[in-house]
Image (cartoon, rainbow, N blue to C red; front, top):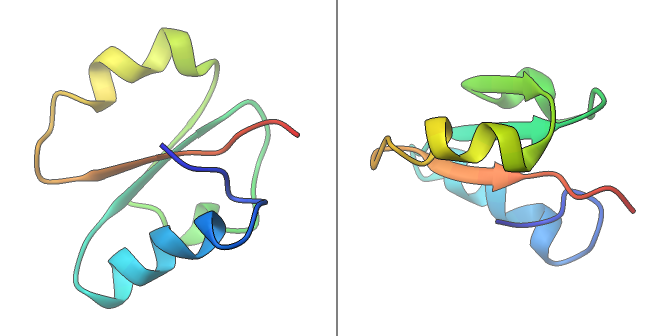
Length: 66
């Protein structure tokens, strides 16, 4: 879980992508990194996380509201 607004945590999803990984973004609103995600869920993290964490092949990256 990391914030897409706080450095250096915001660089982790892109680092994963460069290494061949995939990311999921769960956030209430659109983010600048949505277009790079394999899956984008616009909703609450507490409602979405059980479904997204069931896949062990994906890095789950949650965008925090700041």
